[in-house]
Amino acid sequence: MTDTLTRPSSAVRASGLAAAVGGAVVVVLGIVGAASPDLVGAAWFATVVPAALLFAAGLLGLRRLAVDLGASGLIAGALAVAAVGSTLFALAHAYALLDEDTAILLFSVFLVVTSASLVVAAVGMFRGPARLPRWATLVAGVWPLATIPAGAAIGDLPHFGAIAVWGVTWVTLGASMLRAARR
Image 1 (cartoon, helix red, strand yellow):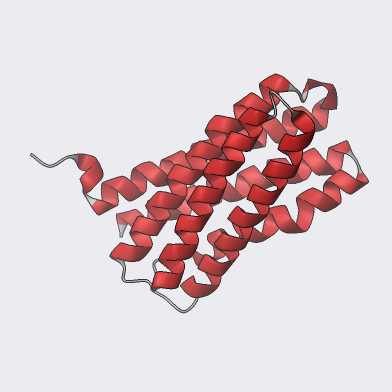
Image 2 (tube, helix red, strand yellow):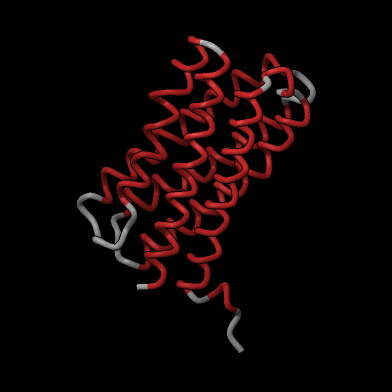
């Protein structure tokens, strides 16, 4: 009997769903933060933890898809680094429950690591197999670097709005993975 998660398409579908669900959680968190910044606190940070871990699961599935399609080692490596970065991003949000100031520095660094790795992977995907979700990967990597810090500098509404749209990029990446797994 074969475990469904050992079959590539099943594993990629489960990971794509994980990325999409994590993205949906971040969309809700961004909307809540934009609507009422006073609600951003311990519960908000704690809710980011499972969302970021779902992102990591999604990235591992995307890595598996890339490897199964014969993508380069650069793509596989960049996606592995992104998965580790996302996991550390989640842990930094958990640490925010103890020391918010240090945690902000940590999850900022891990967001950059994750995003930069996604950009590297996406650039490699443009030269790799056509079934890989290159545009969704690129946008999920570029968006937070281009908008979240700038939004935070402007004010709460743009900051949390950028976070909500970042969640949409993960929903899109998850949906792209689901489509790629069906082919």
